[in-house]
Image 1 (cartoon, rainbow, N blue to C red):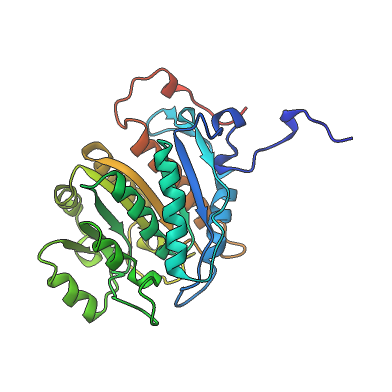
Image 2 (tube, helix red, strand yellow):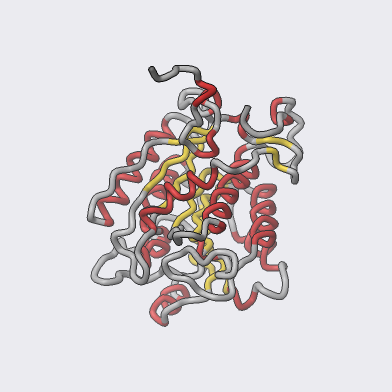
Length: 311
């Protein structure tokens, strides 16, 4: 006979967080997995990213040595996966509807992809709640094509669709088509771009990015923004990207200067037998939840001082 003792069960959610901290009604943060990769253009497999990230997160220690606290006390619930449909525009619409419900319920939303095309739906929902919002787009690719393979909602068009909704700042770009460059130049400053070639020998670009953004910011991260030496598990890899502590330093600057209203992490394409990139993606999500949604830095809350992993 199966036991009902909860100590024999490990929750299958982000971080294997105890049920009392992962309850939807009590949680501040909602994680929305979107396993979708219908428009990938090089290597498919990002549909497996959300599950791999959640699985990897279950090995994390949630005491954060940087801030000397744990962030789980705020409550992080993991939702069911958004069901995929074989139409990128409809899929973005599904993400929009799901995120809108969560925002109406006063949740902070973290979307986990899946391919990058899904981000336009999350941005649309956040834009309705925060009309003055700007988007920080961190990516190896400009993603500024009007259409790709006959599809305006292809993953290679996501930044273009987002820029049609709100101001956009792209960071880390090191792959761009001529037509994309021409579009950016004609945007009259509505679209700003920081190329990886100008970022590798100095971090002065970080303050320039911060100054280019308004108060409310949504962040969309394609994991190929990282250098392939630490993040090979992406569908369209490019050399020359960001390293771990460089990304964290940048995210802390954003956290201290801006109100981050939501974020997504996309394009994890798990490689069988190489789980390290999955852990990197999971720890990034956890660090960003701490940076953006727990009054980082300087919180003196006694609750925030609770440390350690699950009991």
